[in-house]
Image 1 (tube, rainbow, N blue to C red):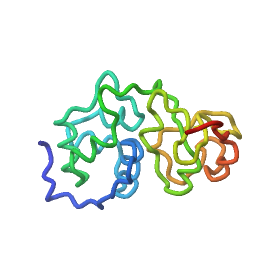
Image 2: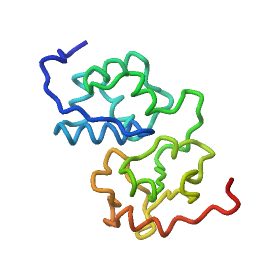
Image 3: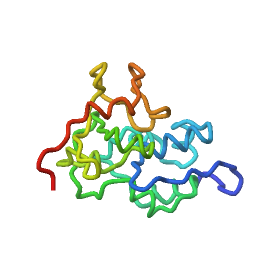
Length: 173
């Protein structure tokens, strides 16, 4: 291990239920005024942190050892960090396209990892289709790590205002 956790004072960030690793890392960085580079360098994970922030988890899925080292830095258990990832067998939507349930985000400002699962096209809770791009500027969403203010990174439209653009799922169970 390259760092001595007892010598680094960092603000602890409590994970949200179902939160993606990308969103969590972004909140951790902002709370501690750290960069992806710093986290990668201090933990020895290097570019892995950058890939995880973009939800690029294949072909280099985070190892148990990497999660344990990161866990020591962020003061969240490795098991809890693993919950922020899909299982290795869980199929994911293609990288580069981020999905959002604006109704969920309005209630709890958090990107949920389940929105990135292949086959998940709608929110079970709100029975609304997920958004894959901003309804105003039509650009894809930035990585959840960048979702500081709950707005489109490109045009500034708030996620709250996007709820009306989510189509209702018909005949949902």
